[in-house]
Image 1 (cartoon, rainbow, N blue to C red):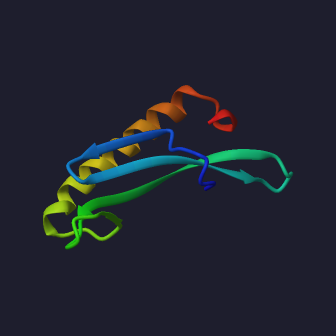
Image 2: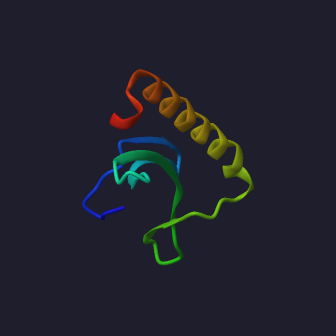
Length: 88
């Protein structure tokens, strides 16, 4: 992912965020297509009062993370079913 690119969709709850990105790939015929991927992150405030981001979850984050990931799956599934595979 290029740092100038932005996710196509975000789902948030509390300090958790699931972001859907489109990654470009090429098949054996050198034709370009896109594949969705998801990044899950948690924002917290460190001991110096600064905001930080991590991919580490605590016990209380796990269920919320599962729900956010389910939303991502459903959004990708609906989006892919309404668009041509090579256009997604």
